[in-house]
Picture (tube, rainbow, N blue to C red):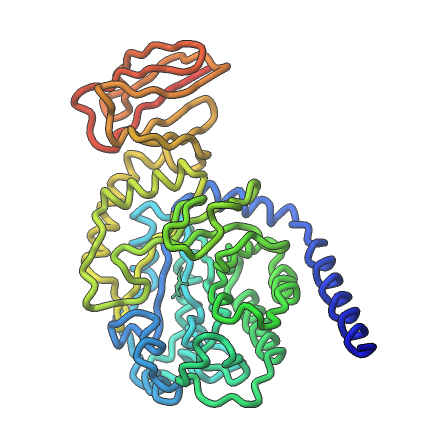
Length: 435
Ligand code: GLC
């Protein structure tokens, strides 16, 4: 009994001190500036790429086919994406209007796309390709003025010190790890994060994923987050843990959902949208993150630009995913969709970049910037839409797509009734200026 209470006191002490340490995080001025820039940029490219692209069945293939990790390692010996061009991918993102790229450095399979000194399961040591993909991406991003952000999986099906006590460990494909020492694994992660934050220039953000596989493990996020902010104080930290933002995190992410929605039942997203942090939604261009040969459910460019405006209206960025093929190229369908999105962004980018959220209605959504409200019309109701607006006098409303032709409207104390022209195109923008 006495031992139990001593133990309880010790555990409480450790928890409280970890909590206190975490709460002492104060973002640096550079970090706050990067947050602002991240929000201004609004649109990014997510890249899921790794050994799994060779099997054409998504990034979970090892788990789904229960491929023992020793067998899975053989894929490294065949990974030779000679047609990979970082410039081509960065330029595809840039011409789509994307301003940052978040690429997987290590996904759940544990394979590293950079030259890590802490494992041989990486692109330099284990593959015939022997080119540091993260280095090439960092250089190309720098050349083309795109911010590079890095995804890092907390979950690791390969590392011997990653615990097998989580949901996946029970399936057996991760191999026997009777002596796994999780604190060593945490040190491994801190070491790897320090590598990727030291050798590739300024990194916009670290994007964590996979903690949900083993929630009770002692993740020591305080230590991990401190290692990141020590290496690059300005680097943002986000964690796809499907839970409330924790101290030390700089932005909040929503997987396949607008902030506040919870269509997959993964999260308490609906309850806790962070008030002051940048927000980001990530989404796929078909139904898969990693390359899936048989996934032809490609989303149209119109539905994706609509999603982008919905994100902006919800004050969130959109991180839109591509999964390159094993030869290093993007699927032609993605290239085509990206270029169509780019054409839309050339005309409408100003209604997205640097804006803040607005309202969402059945007729469409709004974003706002300075003294303007940008009305993205999806579906006008009876040729009219109503916009709540108080304390601001409307100076005029113009139809940006038609040489700024004036639109008639009627303002009352609570809002504005806008007469929408009958020939309005889908997703056309009306710009309301107030004073
Ligand atoms: C999920 C998937 C993972 C993917 C991520 C992207 O967490 O498990 O494979 O990388 O979503 O949001």
